[in-house]
Image 1 (cartoon, rainbow, N blue to C red):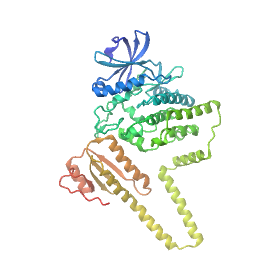
Image 2 (tube, rainbow, N blue to C red; image 1 turned 90 degrees about the vertical axis):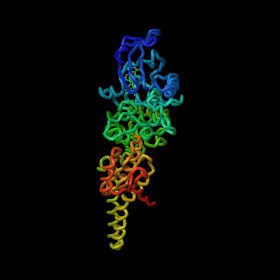
Image 3 (cartoon, helix red, strand yellow; image 1 turned 135 degrees about the vertical axis):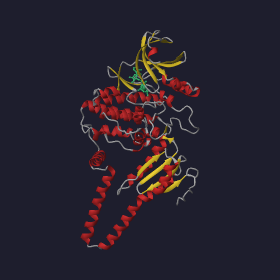
Image 4 (cartoon, rainbow, N blue to C red; image 1 turned 30 degrees about the vertical axis):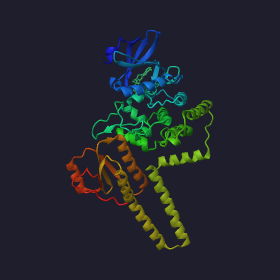
Length: 466
Ligand SMILES: Nc1ncnc2c1ncn2[C@@H]1O[C@H](COP(=O)(O)OP(=O)(O)OP(=O)(O)O)[C@@H](O)[C@H]1O
Ligand SMILES: [Mg+2]
């Protein structure tokens, strides 16, 4: 279907050649035969516009996007249909995508900050007009030969939202049902999109302009380091790290970067949107300041507080085990100080031993208490059939569930491991593919901490003590 369009016309657009394709359709270079100018034509995937509701929502969004005029926003010229083919005619950008520029090794620090600044300004105008991009990523930003950055596909991601979302699903909700062991696809989107999601998207919550700021933060991170901040072996792993894991500071990945770059990128990438830049204007202002400092070669000076937090980050990065390592180091220093004091003051060694023993018991049982609390929280998810616990291994048996359930459960387990500073971490296995026989095996080898009423025939639901 794709190649057959070349040489044909859609309305007054003559299709000349194929440019590329993505999650929503195929992009061609074409010629507007009325205005005699080059255009890019995106032919939308027919299944995405088949549903009338979804189509209507998309058209509303596209109309708002078409009203945007900003040098950093790829202009939408037209949305039309010809013989059942729905297409968007837009400004043809003669340039390369950011991903291409990164792959070609052609971005330096100043260039990256400048691109970030242009995009932040375009984004600010769009947000002020009430439109969220929803799909900011390095494939959706192109840079022309003379250095103009252009943000493409404004609002088009609306098309990928479930048209038949369950009632109560917030707009922007990501509803991808995962089955273990099968390749995961996200509503037809290319997997690359996942790496630029905001935590809100990963958790299936409603989006707002600050979600775009997060995604732009990922693009900035990628431009200045050449690496993605959140990467996992699978889709769920990646979404999990977006939702819960703090990325390595850019200044740790590339030691030559000034700390100010870290400050700006890190503020875009805060998990809690209240901690991010409140709007794209403020981000643009910081990028502008950074750009002029870089251009004038000003020594980028730091406040004492920034210096201290930079020092702690560097320490964290150099100690194995991150936060946990830092905790153990702090505990060791504290223990040495206490012992020294006891020795100096000749205090009773017996009372110290008693305190240490109770402290030890309290810490040892802490993991158990937290796993118990986890089971209680997991029991609140309707899709969870049972939770088995055996030593440090937790097995969660569930129905096929949306990705965000996996992300949430993994997040709860991570929260435990963040607080467990001694002994082995809790390992969780999330299973939605267990046959009854497997469940029987689990029942023999592990203890059943929770079982949904209907899910485990023949077994009574154990009491969960308060
Ligand atoms: N207006 C345009 N001018 C020139 N080239 C474009 C234009 N729009 C898209 N392209 C090119 O076509 C390719 C495919 O774009 P498309 O938007 O379909 O995919 P994508 O950006 O990878 O994914 P998504 O569907 O999520 O936006 C892009 O990588 C880009 O190189
Ligand atoms: Mg695109």
